[in-house]
Length: 93
Picture 1 (tube, rainbow, N blue to C red):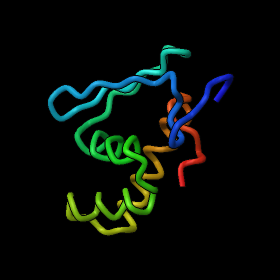
Picture 2: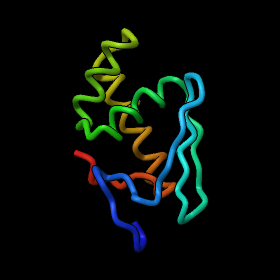
Picture 3: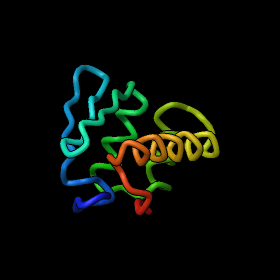
């Protein structure tokens, strides 16, 4: 992250709020934000709690009844989207 510290791969400049089943995630340094649907919110809550990618994908598969391969792909895509917005870094394990 440009000039920012991270915790669990999340910039310390990031704040977020859950509204219903969705989350709005904001990087205060860049003013970039991401609006996550219920699936994205599920992933975000696990990542922000410090869960590893593999554990997030495993939980996603169990919660939504999808294959672990699809869950892993969805998790990686979510992380890549947030990395582009400098909300997450790719250092999440």
